[in-house]
Image (cartoon, rainbow, N blue to C red; front, side, top):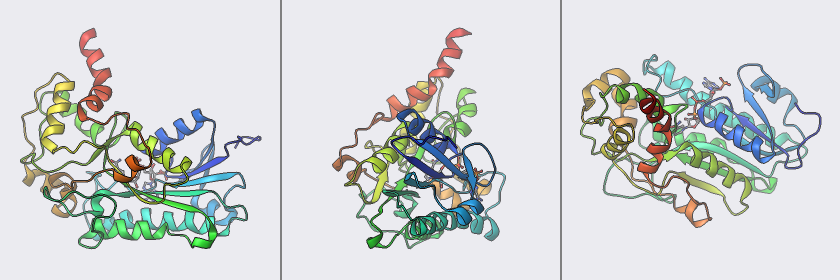
Amino acid sequence: MANQTSHLGTVVIGGGTGFIGTALSNTLKRKGYDVLTVSRKLGPYRITWGELNSKGLPESTTAVVNLAGQNVLDPMRRWTEGFKQNVWASRVNTTQYLAQAIKEAPVKPKVFVSASGVGYYPCGKDEEFDEEGPGGDFDFLSRLCSDWENAANLPHDLGVRTVKVRTGVVLGRDGGMIQQLIFPFFMGFGGPVGSGEQMMPWIHIQDIVGLFIHAIETDNVTGVVNGVAPQIITNRDFAKAFGRAMWRPSFVPLPTFVVNMMFGEERAKIMTEGQKVVPAKALDTGYTFKYPDITKACTEFSRLINIDRTDS
Ligand SMILES: NC(=O)c1ccc[n+]([C@@H]2O[C@H](COP(=O)([O-])OP(=O)(O)OC[C@H]3O[C@@H](n4cnc5c(N)ncnc54)[C@H](OP(=O)(O)O)[C@@H]3O)[C@@H](O)[C@H]2O)c1
């Protein structure tokens, strides 16, 4: 850790080594924050979960973020009860550890921002959900979101603002869904999942990072915030935009039964079904999206591939 702390203070990030965590850490550092990651592995500017439990938060901590979580869509892992337990514990327990560290800290951070998912809301095309929408109680993933968000609750008298970001599919070159889709799309085998008519709540990586920072820095952002772009699209809209941005066709569908076979039906729902979610609170509290539409977003993360194409 740096000997001299930044005047902006330290942001402690659980899961700061992941796709979103790395992008968030880099942006926070560029802004002048110190960043300390809580990880299962040792490394520079990192502490382990055990060290967090025994030593607590550094006194300079101004914000705590949790982005830890076992990858739900790991194709190498079968959707067994054991794996579901890992998925649950890696989110709920880590959030509880950070909440406990905040409760015990002699000097409190200003804010605790924890990830959650749009899986909280029911799937479908008819109803549109802002942060007041119903959910959190109808299947494994929705109940996981409820438990995850409840784990971030802190007693009011602690004076620590709490924000839970219900995140949609995060799109960016360095991780998540795009990393898995780049190859098939590049080879011309890309297309929608199933009928493609299901909704796809999405957000560009730079905007999810922007929203976490908005949540850290904006005093009137509290409670649940939907982490999705304002443009509501279907999975087919995404496939078309991504194909076009890569100068490739995008009409080879990935049949629903294949996705169900690969991931198990309960988990495959993340791809075969989707929710209609709007970022009401982000917009109401003054967040400006850098990538509000899918064409602009796809053009950004396909840029390097198009450069490769022009060079060849
Ligand atoms: N990416 C998306 O599209 C998306 C959408 C909705 C919600 N989210 C949520 O946002 C969070 C961050 O997403 P991400 O895409 O950045 O995830 P990621 O790249 O998979 O990284 C998550 C981090 O969690 C830690 N982790 C993994 N398995 C763990 C376990 N069993 N126990 C404790 N920690 C574990 C890892 O850190 P160490 O190896 O350093 O311990 C990893 O770097 C996740 O909770 C995810 O569910 C993501």
